[in-house]
Amino acid sequence: MALAFAFLMGGAGPALAKKVLLKVPCSVPFSVPVLGDDIIGFIADRINSTSQGTIKMRLYEPGKLVPPLEVLDTVSSGKTNAGYTAAFYYAGKNPASVLFSSFPFGPEPAEYIAWYYYGNGLKLYQEMYDHYGYNVKVLPAGIISAETSGWFTKPINSPEDLKGIKMRIAGIGGKVVTKLGVAVTMLPAGEIFQALEKGLIDATEFSQPVCDVPLGFHKVAKYNYFPGWHQPSTVQELLINKDVWNQLDDQQKTLIETTCMAATLYSLALSDGMQGKVLRENSEKHGVKTMYWSDEMLTAFENAWLEVAAEEAAKDEMFNKVWKDIQQFRADYKQWASVGFLPRPEPPTAK
Image 1: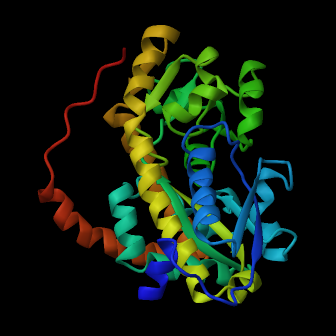
Image 2 (image 1 turned 30 degrees about the vertical axis):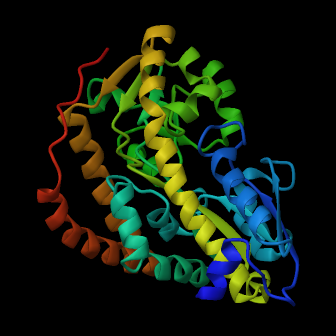
């Protein structure tokens, strides 16, 4: 432990440490606040500056090295030796992956972090990718708090209003709104605005307000809905090809693990700290109406989610295993959460 600490603080590193260049394609454009260069740049800068030359991380914008939604496959195959992405992008092939990134009515950041680092989250995260046959080492490497529920071109006043809506929505939230009549599509960040502007979709979600602004949704869709029931928090991940990971020495592994933990704290500070100003500017400068879902709508979303979760658990053994574990953890956590914190204020009316 003392050697690892000395290494992290810039002391003498291992004399014979094998040098490694990690080529890291990313799934999100660097220009997107928090999700982009803020987090992965933080990780790369600190690893490059503290590894004493034994690890070099080189980052690639989406599409520069591999397509943004193919990062997992390319890292597993060894075409690239690392990648930065989010597990829910791959839910079509790996149903349980959503439980490690973000899922409807799931944990807020503090609870997610508790499950990862105190509960069974880390162990099950690696087991999940092993189960689905991926040759990767996975590390949580960033977390953001609740997202906006979406940007809509017209107000949604009842579940009936969702029928026929065409919406870009990532992860398992898409299966939830499909049950309510929404036609779902999945688009990478760089293609969403054009689809919205051309009327190919009527609504989109992507991330938090500060992340959405550079993508321009407010120019076309003026109804911004909250809370982000589909993603109460979202975990980003650093993937390293397992053969490459196994060749690293203990100090190199400790440096990467510790930096990823630091990035999780840093990203949460940014994601919570930056939103208020953006919400105000969206309203005052861009004419955006900040909307809060009614109890009727939240109930409809939650009931649809519980149907989806039961279906996924019935057909996928890994989903079922993780779902049971996180439900048990949350039942215990709820004992604390129900008494430990001051109540939140009432949600705002639309403005």
